Length: 41
Image 1 (cartoon, rainbow, N blue to C red):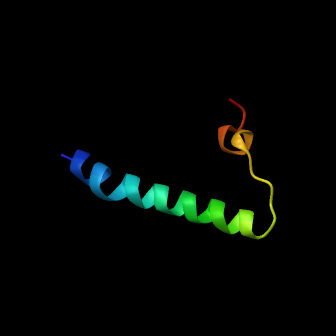
Image 2: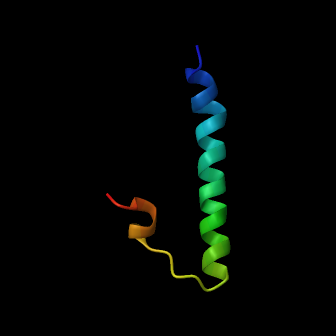
């Protein structure tokens, strides 16, 4: 079953990288908002 892998590694790893990327972009002066994450939704 792949659920434990997704819950314990894949999702935390994904959110770590999203948060880090957001922080680096904001530090560089890029204005990132909610629509940037939602895309065409």
